[in-house]
Image (cartoon, rainbow, N blue to C red; front, top):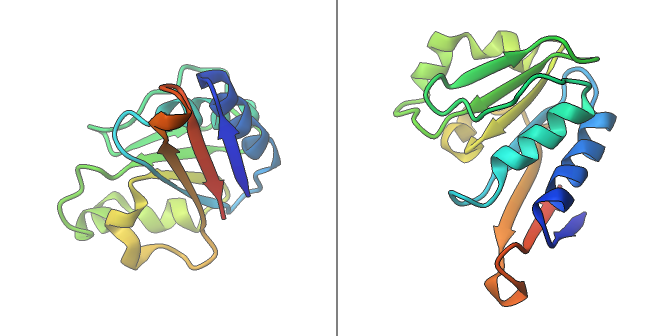
Length: 139
């Protein structure tokens, strides 16, 4: 599925729709360059899960837990992971195979431990379409 986003609200709304349909055990892999809108996507996704608290990118904490939605959200940002072994130290299995939903930014950095049933989401800019344009591809 390809979604065209012409403004931040479009990205938020697309993510909200996906979050509202997410089920326990789902794992979403969020990819895109710096500044492409991954945090906006994460905010919309969380809102779709019924999470009302502010959502920020867990760049320095690696994982942020949001347990108060209809399903818990485990939001990872693995950009700063130097070695996949760090994920074992975090106890990633309890999140990946638990009863919440995982949203993992920069997931390609930990590709070897990702479950096969994970769904990929790619956000890309296309400046020819405009500064705020994003193409969101959901597999």
